[in-house]
Image 1 (cartoon, rainbow, N blue to C red):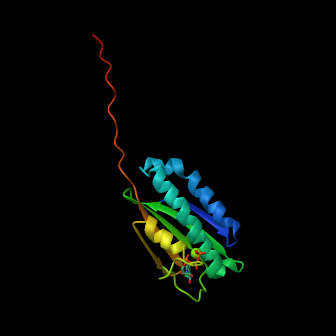
Image 2: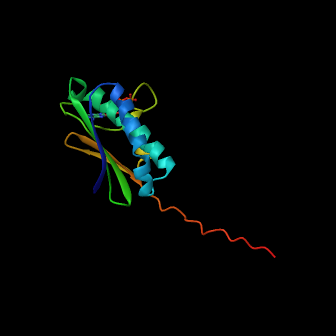
Image 3: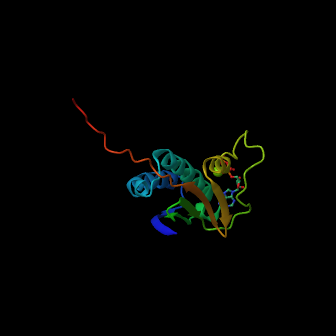
Length: 142
Ligand SMILES: Nc1ncnc2c1ncn2[C@@H]1O[C@H](COP(=O)(O)OP(=O)(O)OP(=O)(O)O)[C@@H](O)[C@H]1O
Ligand SMILES: [Mg+2]
């Protein structure tokens, strides 16, 4: 995996916004590896939820930090959000994600091609699409 960008922020609520803006600033670099605008929008939504989770459910939110990595192998973009651990729970989609809460990982599962966790990181993968390159239009006159 090649690193596209990394952001290290405090585990506070406004860092979710900083993370969204960070992904948006990476747009041009992600376009180079054929990440579409739609996929970028998915990445922005997911980073918001994953950073919010780190702040809400782990020691990151108790004076710690959250680190966001964006990597690619040319076929997928991998978003990883590393927290400071110390959680009483594991990142799991809630079975009844219709009431209060339990929306974040449900959304990540719906928008990513794969997601998971290891140690104190939660990751999600998104596709890099090959764009159709239209040939130059021909101008014919007679
Ligand atoms: N980084 C994490 N470390 C440990 N546990 C986590 C982490 N992220 C999420 N979880 C656990 O997974 C559950 C589901 O997360 P999810 O984001 O779907 O819901 P939520 O954060 O409880 O509510 P919402 O996102 O709707 O505000 C959380 O309630 C929490 O128990
Ligand atoms: Mg959440």
